[in-house]
Structure formats: C-alpha cells, structure tokens
Length: 301
Image 1 (tube, rainbow, N blue to C red):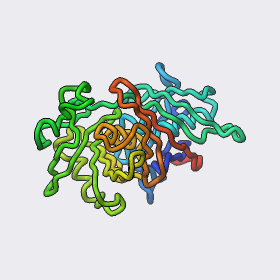
Image 2 (tube, rainbow, N blue to C red):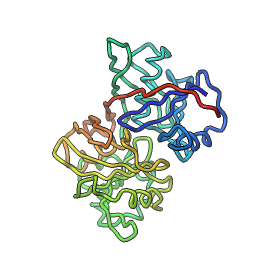
Image 3 (tube, rainbow, N blue to C red):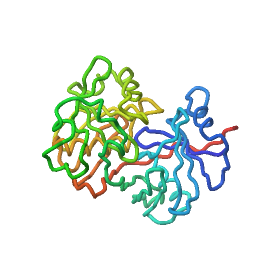
C-alpha cells in the first residue's frame, strides 16, 4: 500500500489515497501501522476517498482503531494532499467528514505550487449537552454556573455546561463542554501546562461516565486576552502534539467564559494555531495553521 506521512503541528497521520488504493480491515490497519516501533508510527490513518457531495472524503481512524468524526489538523493535510497531487485544482476545497462538509482555503507557495497552510471553516460550535454528548447530572454547582444562565449565550440552548464543576476521582475541575463535530472537555488550570500530569488525568477524563462517547480533553492556561496555551489528551490516541478541533473548542470556551477576545492564538506543543470566532451561535469558527508533508512510502499489509 502506498501512503504519505503528513502532519499539522506534529499531529501526524498516515494518509492513503482512496482514489487509487482499495484497503480492507481499516480499523485493524490503523492499530498496526500507528505503532512507532512496529509500524509507521502516527496518531492514526486518514483515507482520502472520492465523495459524491464534496471534492473528497476524509475517512479517519485513531491509533486505537476507533473512527474519528473530524480532525482539524488532519483536514488541512487532506486539502494539501489533494491540491499538491492535482486531484483538486481550486484553492477552495470542500472535504466530506463525519462532522459535515468542511470548506478549506489553502495558501500556496508560488515557487513550488504546493500548499503551505490552510484556513478551515470549522462550522458553528455545538454547546447543547445532548449533542456533544455529555451528561449534565455529573456536573455540580448552582444552575447558573452549570448552565450559563443570564448571559449572552443562553440562546444556544436551555442548558450549556460552562465552567461547571466535575469530580474526577478525588479532584474537582471546572469544565466547559463544546463539540466541534467531536466532543471536547475544556479544563482551565493555573499551573503551566507542561507541569500538568496529563498522562494520569487524561485517561480518567476520556472514560468518565459524564461522556458517553468518551471525550477529548484540553487542559488550558490563559496567558492574556489573545493567547492561551494547552495540552490535549485525544480519545483513542492519548496525548498528541496538536489538535485542531481541540484548539477551536478551547477558543470558543475561552470566548464564552470571557477570558479572551474573539481572535485567539492557541499555543500547542507542536506550534500555534489562530482561531477566529465572532461569538454568534450561528456563525462558524475559523482555524488557520500549517500542513506539512514528511515523506512518501510503501508498506506491506
């Protein structure tokens, strides 16, 4: 099987051209090839397939073989792949995902005619607990704190989980829940993110009963009105160097909590992403960041 290794800020996947390759047992293949010592090594596999409703389809599998709805870093690399390989000739590319069709504007290096970065329409954030999904019964505090009563974001739904208290083992965290096509729990901490015990707390959040489909968890420190830093524990993959949907969810959470303005630089271990959202419940958030090819290869499967 031919493949291309690509990454967005170190969030790396094995990309397979589904226009040309016909692969069975994709979930099992993702598990084997994602292993760093026995496979290619990655956060998962993304198949780039034909689509009847868009320029192409992104079919994503995490490192544990589970299907992912959407990946912000991954979809930028999909756009780069189809443009660089002449599958799509336009600089505006529509990609079908399980979280809907994503519109991407690519920036091209004119010297090489290859994509160097991309701006993704991530869609409008989802805050209704049943659509994330998360179970409000696990969150503690008065109703105003849990559900965001009496603020500008009440119109999203009757209940939103905003800065609500969630007990995880022996520690109580303040959590805001957002979906960007996949579920995210955003947790604000006071210590620098590099000091946080992510390997311990990440799995406990991922499998907490408050999240019936498991959850991606971002641990965030606010630096100033336009900057936050985060580390992410992704369901099915563990810690990754970057998460595009997670960075977008963090920016949305920071805006609705009043911590930041509407343009937020999110600093991840792999680099920075710029997230823009005007705070309107019906408007999309936009994510801008790089897409990088590492190498092409072949693997026996």
